[in-house]
Image (cartoon, rainbow, N blue to C red; front, side, top):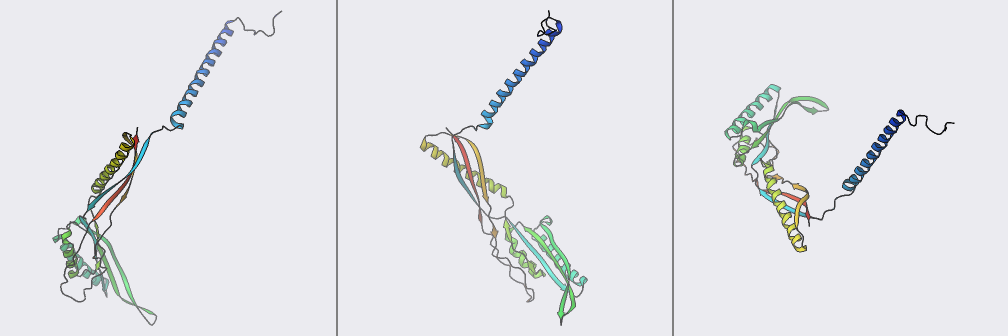
Length: 261
């Protein structure tokens, strides 16, 4: 009598093949689970747990005193006449003369930009009634002056030509990044000196930089001459104003973290 619990394929080729396939699958599954467990442990070791380092953090400061080499100024006119064409004609005359003045002062065309040009009607109010008085033409040029010795002559000459609007003068430097880099190097050297002095006292050896951040304080140049308009009603040649560009500092503060052992 046959045993009902014994597989019908036992002893046959089909049963042997099935057993081999099952064994291969089980071995593959075991290898995969082992690899996954190893990777999980490695990930925990290197990502889940931060690498411990002995560090010190020092602040450093770098200062570079600089004098501006560029002045930005706005020159313009406000002309009012009874007709648009008359106002435009007078404005054009003054602006052409101003451009000639700037060219004679070695101001490049690339450093002169029209900042505004507008035409607007002007009205008077009499007994609640609006009456057209004329038209106003306004034009402004934004001028970059690279020769600071000529600022006063340019402003004085512009006033003689009929320019009646002068914006505040803004002083700056043409290549600020070079000055910032000088201040940055000084700040890093200052931080390193402090860190080395501290590490020597406590018996540690200074190693590589782990992190670094900085804060930049850029100077604001402001001239004492910043007139809003020029009164041309008196006539005659006005003396050229004296412009003092002054000097200021670029300051960079750094925080540097060093590894020590």
